[in-house]
Length: 118
Image (cartoon, rainbow, N blue to C red; front, side, top):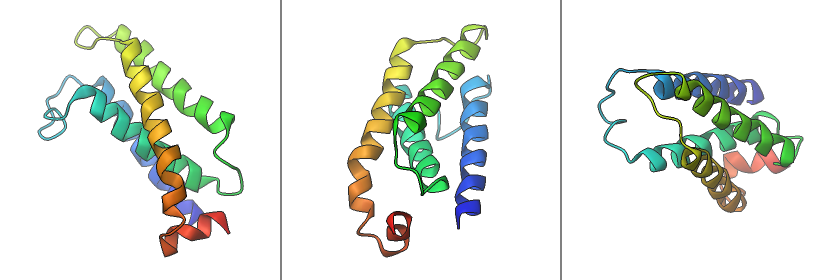
């Protein structure tokens, strides 16, 4: 199960990086509000990171790793002529992480996910 979460984390990380750096229009994705996309992506990354290493609490190291990835994306976008870097995107990433932290206690009530805390 842990391997599955780690593979999912790797996959979603690659997809997020691709979406953040492509100049291609992606139907459905482009229709979402940019900040909502950041919140959704980093909420999902938080979930996958947390479940990929269940023996460790969602601590400062996990949070720092995710925010570092968010900052990395913005640095890369700064150098892309068709993208724009924004501090507000990193703030939206942090909101996505916070949303996961607020929702995480509710996940304990879902039987298959409860195993993460056992």
